[in-house]
Length: 210
Length: 210
Image (cartoon, rainbow over all chains, first blue to last red; front, side, top):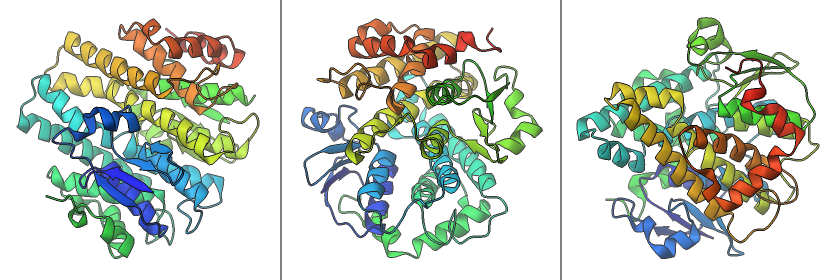
């Protein structure tokens, strides 16, 4: 399989973690988002949305959208599980993942920050915007986990929730959020970052890291 | 079951459609987003994110995030299917749904438009922002379906993709997008709106419609 991504794209980072947790190795192809490589015609043929990640399967199918890719990995390579069997627990984990993937990440990615710039927000205002989106969103995430004491977000092993959390914590720090104030999230992140799968997927460990 | 929602919330609209397609009836409770009813303490106990929809199950569990709710409905009430059995087709449908739920909807909802206002964008600029997000996002959606000729997004019956598409088309028109230019999406929307489940879920048919 091939994964088109970018070291600092947190959606790519999610897929890297999922692949690593499942012990799947892929060829990684970097698309430099700041240089706009994802906008080139050849890449648009892979993904008309001109976004990373794209996973090209062994059958040559192009899969897009990180959560859809991870659900596909879960269905085609079930072990180790990233979602438990119980529907209620699956719903809780997906809701946590979506609260990051829908409510935080899209509001602070490069494309939106550029768009805010074209609407007159200077760099300081854009960074404040991204800071606030992360701080508020992670506050919600912390609240969603209130009362639980498991090492990972939802249990004793990493799930789709942890896969979304760790890249968002990385992003939040980039925008100056003090993530240590999220006591539960911070402890979970430490548990995750002790695992090889999370370490090897980290942005700074990628070949295209700057 | 109880569904906390708002007639014009497109995430609530998605869940209404899914429930109706599966023939499930629920008690609906309206939370008036413009009046900020979702911010009240009693509602935050149901959902710390202070967002609709929330589905309260027969066991008193509160489920949040529309796509997580719909996946839970699919797992607990499998018929009629909103996702086919084939993992590849499931990935395509989820990617289409997520391209709306992550790339369009969060960037043009009331919360974000208010936030843009507090960063100095006047009403005209905010509406232009929401127009552009919808127009660009739906252009991507149209491209994702290129070459297909099925009556619905991915086949002969509505799926999670159609459930996300129809509310977004409704939103796009609110912001002045001429949705007829998306020939394929427009035809699919017409197929959907011919079905009772989509008709009864429409914003203007809800008790809290203004």
